[in-house]
Amino acid sequence: KQEVTQIPAALSVPEGENLVLNCSFTDSAIYNLQWFRQDPGKGLTSLLLIQSSQREQTSGRLNASLDKSSGRSTLYIAASQPGDSATYLCAVRRTTGFQKLVFGTGTRLLVSP
Amino acid sequence: KAGVTQTPRYLIKTRGQQVTLSCSPISGHRSVSWYQQTPGQGLQFLFEYFSETQRNKGNFPGRFSGRQFSNSRSEMNVSTLELGDSALYLCASSSLWTGGNTDTQYFGPGTRLTVL
Image (cartoon, rainbow over all chains, first blue to last red; front, side, top):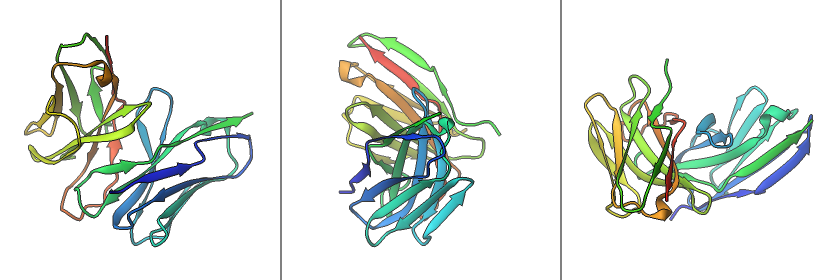
């Protein structure tokens, strides 16, 4: 059974800091890993998708890496801003189970001005 | 291109009632998945539809059901509501399912269901 864990559960940083969010999964048989952000009471916004054959993906100030063999992914946020405050979720899509995503528990990020 | 839309956005029901939620995927997307989000359990997969066929089902009781129409719009139904069904229900769409598809899934804003 695939289990996805995110550490830390909550993180508070001052504006301008670079930060790293961690995601671990127990079953390396994945098609891809996706990072999302969720603002309070809202739906999920897709940030980055990494295919199982890729090592990293970048979008603006965001960089996500994937190490399938060790079951780990990191989301790096450069020069954090108050607008980055949200809950960040990682999700893996397994090689079986069609489009089903297995989500981590999330990291709640607060960036203070 | 319009995003994933879900209606209604908010619902209040009482125990024992039933409810139907609707999801319209992004135009051209044929795969729709449903998730339940609660503070205690996080995001849990309910089911997935492609071309009007249920492809996958999560670990939920039979009170939870769904369907997909020929225009890819999907509905989920919960019968005999329980207090524990209070949650944010999210649907997601993706463009193609080919068995090896790796497309991004796009989520709607969710329907907030409160059961009293």
